[in-house]
Image (cartoon, rainbow, N blue to C red; front, side, top):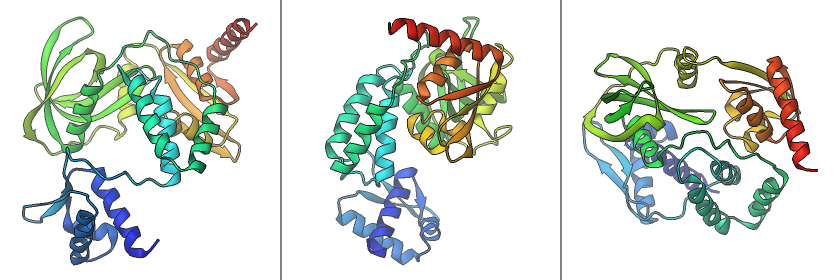
Length: 319
């Protein structure tokens, strides 16, 4: 690949990651001049990518939304990661996501080169997973999309919310992030009316709509949305803190179970430590089994006992 072609791919990748890019920031990222950025943008337009120039003091660029795009360019590892992620999403707690994920996976596998198709097929055939418990609430995928876009664009949202005690209210918030913990989705945001950070359960949230105004993001206490949600939840239900050694490399775990990957720390080339928590000891045991590798539970003792009970039930079902 020539230097120019490689730079075009980098530019396209950056344009796909967020809505607006100032021209001088793109130039800094790619270590080229503003003139080179303008020339590369014109090349992308000639290839069929609808790149718009934006006005303002600094000027910038964005990919036009709602337009038929040329094929997405992925390297080998990205293609495999997406295929694995789609298979995992087929069992997630998002309403209708199973059928949608399977359709997307079929389309992806149709355009994968033969050697990548073999990699994805081998990984799928070698991996055994358990379906999630049916007790988890389903989340509206459109609501997730609206909130994710508002988090990205720093746009205020309004929505209806039903609290744990059944009290309903309307909220105006500055969205920060979405967090998936166990079988539930949570939404972290600054509540404008209550002047405080709040965690909202997605299955209790309805009709999120843009409020028509932008905001400057505030700093979330601690900086980690998942830790913030876990800390808030700890006041409502007892948490089982688990520490487990997985008998596989951190990289293999990330491929098998993308949801577990961010919570593992490498020990050596063939093992890693996994720390997680949940209010349900049964769900903790299922999550470990879903990773699909051998493991050793260090704590808590209740999790070791639950894993043993789960193994007995599975063995009995197979006889």
